[in-house]
Every structure is written in structure tokens, then in C-alpha cells.
Image 1 (cartoon, helix red, strand yellow):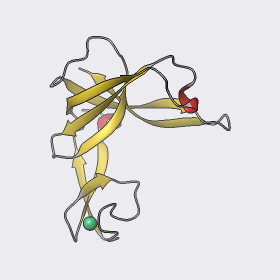
Image 2: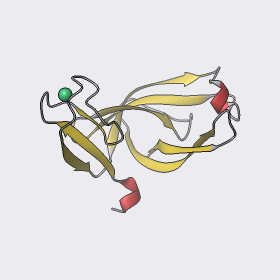
Image 3: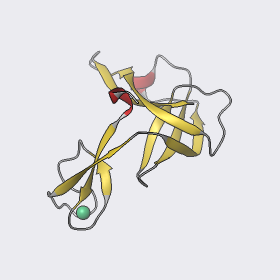
Length: 117
Ligand SMILES: [Zn+2]
């Protein structure tokens, strides 16, 4: 499995909550001490919705799909899916690091989108 499909997570040493590596403090208890976790990145689509009136940042798309993904290590994440076609609850998805949108200042924003496998 290639590196681009790996997401780094961290687990709060106080309350055990698992979250993205980018947060400096635990979003549950504000603790700042963590243990790193790695996952292969494969997840399952728990639920999804199609947004027909995206926020301004996503003005290039008329609509897109937003899903809740549960990873092998139990972490849940909310993220954009790469397609709106043939989505099924329970399907496997993998994260792809790619451009998500241009923000309102015109800068490109990168992050993970989830692609059905
Ligand atoms: Zn915590």
C-alpha cells in the first residue's frame, strides 16, 4: 500500500479519543498529549448525503457527496467523496490526498477525499 493512502491519527492519552493528526489538542477534553496511530486508510462508508447547494468554497461543483467514513481502527471521519454515482452504504472507500477546493482568497486547499474501491 502506498504512503499517500496512509493517514496519521493520534489518540488522546487522557480520554482515548482518536482524531486527525492536525489538531493540536484533543477536541474532546483539550488534553495535549497523544500517542500516534497509523492506519492503512481503508474505510467503510457509513452514510452519505448529496449536497446540492455547496458552500462558496466549492462553487466549482454544482453538487457533491459528503460521507461519514469509519476506518479500520475505529476512527470516524466526515469527508467529501470523489463521486456522487453508485454510492452504497457499507462500501469500501480509500482516502486520496488531492485538491478539495479553491478557498475564497483563491488559494488551493488540499485534503482527503474518499474514493469508492
Ligand atoms: Zn482527550
